[in-house]
Length: 172
Image (cartoon, helix red, strand yellow):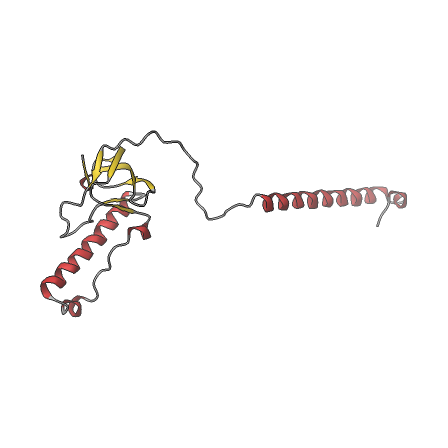
């Protein structure tokens, strides 16, 4: 190790070595402090953190209803999703499911040989959607565009949801 006493011959080189050593100690100290902070307060990467907000009291001004063409197509209640394209996708999936079910009822199981397997029962939870049973109280908070309200509602399991739906899935 180089000491200040042995640096009489080449003082500038020794001073730069000493300052480099001090800089490395400072860097290591910073890294250790950063590591301790991360261990004590870990970041949860990949989680969707939303700030907690206080909502005004729930004031229902509509109710969920089955789509007008149910059970020939559409959902058996109000679909509430994060965005309009997802609501439209869910309506299409329900329509395909009901169409296949009606074909099987009319033509029997042989229809599967012609068209292939039936469309599965849609699962809204897979798309971050909720299916509200008819009669569920809903509060319309505003309109994204005409015919697409933003709503708040409480699911049958007690969880509160916020999202968009289609106007024809609600009765006022």
